[in-house]
Every structure is written in C-alpha cells, then in structure tokens.
Length: 408
Ligand code: HEC
Ligand code: HEC
Ligand code: HEC
Ligand code: HEC
Ligand code: HEC
Ligand code: HEC
Ligand code: HEC
Image (tube, rainbow, N blue to C red; front, side, top):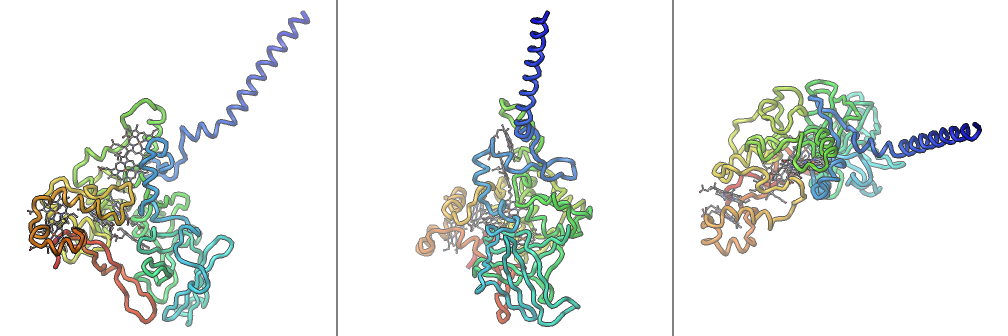
C-alpha cells in the first residue's frame, strides 16, 4: 500500500514536473514563436489590411531587402538622429541669417533643436522660440526638411538642409516671417509609407502618432501584406505567392500608377478619400488629379512630374510596353549608374540613331556617348528653389528631365 502510494505520488510529482517544465519552456519561447506567426502591426489601412514592415520580408526576400534599405525611397523619412540629420551642429556652421530672424541649430542630450530669434516680434510672436527636430524628410540626395511634433500635431520647421552646399538654408517656399507651418497629408503622402490623419480627407495636421510609418517601404508599392506574410510562413513548402498583387498581370496604366502616386505632380484635387487610400492595382485617376492637367508639356515642371514628362515623350508614345521599370529597378539605388541607363537606350536605339551616333560622331564621343546628358538633360525646377543667403536670389534645384527629346 505504502509503495503504491509513493508510486502515485512520484507519478504526480513527475507529471507536475513535466507541466512546470513545459510551461517554463513555453513561456520562454512564447514571444519568439508568436512574434513569428503574428508579426507586429505597424499601421492599418482603411480597407483593414495591416502593414508589417520590410523586416518581416527579409527572411524570404533577403536580396531585395538588402538593396532596398540603401534606396532614396527607404531613407526619404526617418526619426531625427545624428545619423539621419545631414546638417552640422558645429558652432561655426549652425546658423541661418534671415531678413528678420536668426535660426540656430543645436543638439542637447541626443535631441536636436531649432532656436528662432526674431529681430521684431512679428505677428505677436515671441522674440525667441525653440522647437525640436523630430522627423527628417529627404534622404539627402538634394536636401532635407525637418518636422516637429506638438502633442499629436505636426509642423515643418523653417530650417532646411541643402546638399550642394552642405549647409542649412531657409526651407524652399517658406515665408520669411514664420518659424513653422502645419503639415498635412498633402505633404506627407509622397515621403512616408502610411499616415493616419484625424481628418478623413487628410486636411488636418493632427495624426495618430503611432501609425506614422516612416520611409517608403515595400508595402507602399505592394500594399499592406500581413496576410501574405502569415500565409507564406504557415505554408513554407508553397512556392507560389498568395494574398499579393501580381504586378506582372496589371495593365501598363496600373503599373505606372504605382509610381505616379508620387511622381506625377502634386495631384492636389483629391476626388475620393485621402491620399493614403489608393492601393496598387487600382486606378489613380479615380482618387486624385492635378489642377494643371492639360498643360502643354513644356510647362510641366520637372520637379516631381516624371510621369507627365515621360508620357509626353516619343519613346513612351511609340513603345507600348515602356513604363518606369524599363529603366529603373525599384529595389536598388541606381543613382549615377549612367552606363547601365545608356545600355537601356541602346537596346531600342541600336539601329535608329543616325542623327547623333553616326553623322555627329565627334560630338557624341566627346560626350562619352552619354545619351542621357544630351536627351534627358538636368533642368532647373521652377517650384523647387532655395535661397542661399539674405542677399542672393533664389536658386533653382536641377532635376533630370523625363521629356526625352532633342535639345540643342
Ligand atoms: C515566409 C516567406 C515570405 C515572407 C515572410 C514574405 N514573402 Fe513575399 N513571397 C514569398 C514566396 C514563396 C513568393 C513566391 C516566389 C517569389 O516570387 O519569390 C513571394 C512572392 C512575393 C512577391 C511577388 C508577387 C508576384 O508574383 O508578382 C512580392 C511582391 C512579395 N512576395 C512581397 C513581399 C513583401 C513586401 C513581404 C514583406 C512585407 C513579403 N513578400 C514577405 C514568400 C514570402
Ligand atoms: C507629389 C509628391 C510630393 C509631395 C506632395 C512632396 N514631395 Fe518632396 N519630393 C518628391 C519627389 C518625387 C522628390 C525627389 C525629387 C524630384 O523628383 O523632384 C522630392 C524631394 C524632396 C526633398 C529632397 C530630398 C532629397 O533627399 O534630396 C525634400 C527635402 C522634400 N521633397 C520635402 C518635402 C516636403 C517638406 C513636402 C511637404 C511640404 C514635400 N516634399 C511634398 C515628391 C513630393
Ligand atoms: C517604389 C516601389 C517599390 C518598393 C518600395 C518595393 N517594390 Fe517590389 N516591386 C515593385 C515593382 C514595380 C515590381 C515589378 C517589377 C518589374 O516588373 O520589373 C516589384 C516586384 C517585386 C517582386 C517580384 C519580382 C522580383 O523582383 O522578384 C518581389 C518579390 C518584390 N517586389 C518584393 C519587394 C520587397 C520585399 C520590398 C521591400 C524590401 C519591395 N519589393 C519594395 C515596386 C516596389
Ligand atoms: C510614396 C511616394 C513614392 C512612390 C510610390 C514612388 N516614389 Fe520614387 N521617390 C519618391 C520620393 C519622395 C523620392 C525622393 C526621395 C529622397 O531622396 O528623399 C523618390 C525618388 C525616386 C528616384 C530617385 C532615386 C535617387 O537615388 O535619387 C527614382 C528613380 C524613383 N523615385 C523612381 C520611382 C519608381 C520607378 C516608382 C514606382 C515603381 C516610384 N519611384 C514610386 C516618392 C515615391
Ligand atoms: C523601349 C524602347 C525605347 C527605349 C528604352 C528608349 N527609347 Fe527612345 N524612342 C523609342 C521609340 C520607339 C522612339 C520613336 C522613334 C520614331 O518615331 O521613329 C524613340 C524616340 C527617341 C528620340 C527622338 C525623339 C523625338 O522627339 O524625335 C530620342 C532622342 C530618343 N528616343 C532617345 C532615347 C534615349 C536617350 C533613351 C534612354 C534614356 C531612349 N530613347 C530609350 C524607343 C525607346
Ligand atoms: C528611358 C529611361 C527612363 C525611364 C523610362 C524612366 N526614367 Fe527616371 N531616370 C532615368 C535616368 C537616366 C535618370 C537619371 C539617373 C541619375 O541621375 O542617376 C532618371 C532619374 C529619375 C529620378 C531622379 C530625378 C532627379 O534628378 O533627381 C526620378 C525621381 C525618376 N527618374 C523617376 C521616374 C519615374 C517615376 C518614371 C516613370 C514615370 C521614370 N523615372 C522612367 C531614366 C528613365
Ligand atoms: C552630344 C549630344 C548627344 C549625345 C551624347 C547623343 N545624342 Fe542623340 N541626338 C543628338 C542630337 C543633336 C540629335 C538631333 C540630330 C539631328 O536631327 O540632326 C540627336 C538625335 C537622336 C535621335 C533621333 C534621330 C534618329 O536617328 O532616330 C535618337 C533616337 C537619338 N539621338 C538617340 C541617342 C542615343 C540612344 C544616344 C546614346 C547612345 C545618343 N542619342 C547620344 C545629340 C546627342
């Protein structure tokens, strides 16, 4: 009897032991396991689709992930840090003199500030105002602007950074007497993956702070992908993709619309919803239009309207399959890789370029046969201008025109 009792006690102890052990094991591993099968949701689209971020793509699309994080898209907005801010805080190069104010940039305990000293207390403003740099806009190819939170309201600061002179400047188009201006969807729409505005059409500067998804990440061009990630993780032996738009099967206009969201001018006429409602595979014109549509092609500004310019070019009009990815790999930083761009021109023009490659050989070899230098020249933008100091006139920023043409 006693033996039996001891046996039962041992069995019970053994069972309790196993339960405790497996409980401990489970607790220890629970976070990693559930993180894997339910990735952290970064933001939620109006259709209910969840954004999960490029780190979740890494395990299955490592090659694309690696090159994507080096692109201007991925780096076009970020939390302010000594790494993301390109301007210098050294005391000999941290001020901007304006007609009626002086701006000073300084850092303190790992945070970054703009101090505005107004010579006159214009518009009843205080003589001295300090604002924090919270969000950086611009990868720094041409320049950067800085945004500041006040509770859940977002403002742009007056100080910007201009890459060609490696220094601070007055933000383009900024009124001289203001020190901050409200930022709505109309600004953020091209520089972030997703933002959730308090106003359904996106016209306020009040945002749900923890749903601001910085950088142009995979899901801006591919749509929110939680379902794709969950399905592929749950079915590792399946090699066909599910819950994802197949870009190959879209029409040319639908493919162009993915890029035209941000590269076809300001599209200020919002027809439906807000600027973050459009998803790849849909028709962009149902959501937004430009006020200036119908302008002659010479009047399209080179700033940010690569779509309008390219679609006015003979190359595009006479080639039924040409789209942005004919020349651009959306996952790679290709800036300055002229050899590979020129090779793409030659793929179509090997036989038809009599005008420059044959008769004008001296001219073209002088230019190292750089098709782009002559047919897509850098051109001044009329909307993107910077004033370098109080005495100088505003200088245009130069942008590669996408009106492929014959320029003299
Ligand atoms: C657990 C693995 C897995 C994860 C995680 C994953 N994918 Fe995929 N994905 C696949 C597989 C498998 C395919 C089909 C084979 C291929 O195209 O590589 C695919 C295909 C795709 C395609 C091509 C669709 C087509 O046919 O046109 C895109 C785009 C894509 N994934 C984007 C993403 C993005 C963005 C993420 C992260 C948010 C992601 N995937 C996360 C497994 C995964
Ligand atoms: C319609 C889309 C669009 C909107 C809206 C927009 N931008 Fe841009 N922005 C671009 C594009 C595209 C570029 C790249 C240069 C080009 O092609 O013109 C750019 C470039 C920039 C750059 C230089 C980036 C670099 O790394 O060189 C800064 C800074 C910038 N934008 C700030 C802003 C701010 C601030 C706002 C809002 C007040 C804004 N942008 C609104 C599309 C947009
Ligand atoms: C700027 C828009 C953009 C971004 C950002 C982007 N993609 Fe793509 N992606 C595209 C387009 C457009 C295609 C179709 C390419 C083509 O037809 O040449 C594509 C194709 C793909 C494909 C299928 C073809 C292939 O190359 O294997 C996969 C997989 C993919 N993307 C994954 C990703 C992942 C993962 C990320 C982020 C790490 C990402 N994409 C970011 C626009 C984008
Ligand atoms: C969400 C808005 C958005 C979408 C969608 C988008 N772009 Fe961009 N793109 C930008 C902005 C903003 C910049 C400037 C980034 C910077 O330097 O800060 C840019 C820069 C670029 C550049 C210059 C890169 C460099 O190294 O300077 C190229 C090329 C480009 N985009 C092509 C494309 C193509 C092709 C697509 C479609 C497959 C696309 N973009 C989709 C907003 C967008
Ligand atoms: C997908 C094929 C394709 C690619 C790629 C292409 N083109 Fe073209 N291009 C054409 C076609 C087709 C025409 C019209 C020819 C005609 O009308 O006979 C054209 C016309 C032109 C013209 C004459 C324009 C005019 O208005 O008379 C120039 C210049 C030109 N291309 C330069 C370039 C350059 C430079 C590149 C590379 C940046 C390039 N093309 C890339 C297909 C292409
Ligand atoms: C025929 C080839 C070709 C096509 C098609 C094309 N691009 Fe480009 N794009 C180029 C070249 C070449 C450059 C210059 C690259 C450089 O300077 O490193 C460029 C540069 C850019 C830049 C940077 C502009 C600047 O000066 O900072 C953007 C943005 C861009 N392209 C967007 C687009 C978009 C969006 C489309 C589709 C509407 C498109 N491109 C179609 C050849 C092309
Ligand atoms: C030094 C400047 C320069 C360079 C470099 C150059 N072109 Fe041209 N190209 C011109 C001029 C100027 C014309 C007009 C010639 C005329 O009408 O007499 C022209 C005409 C053309 C045409 C239309 C005439 C035709 O024969 O169809 C095409 C297409 C073209 N170029 C493509 C290219 C390509 C592709 C490259 C690179 C391999 C290139 N060009 C390099 C200046 C240049």
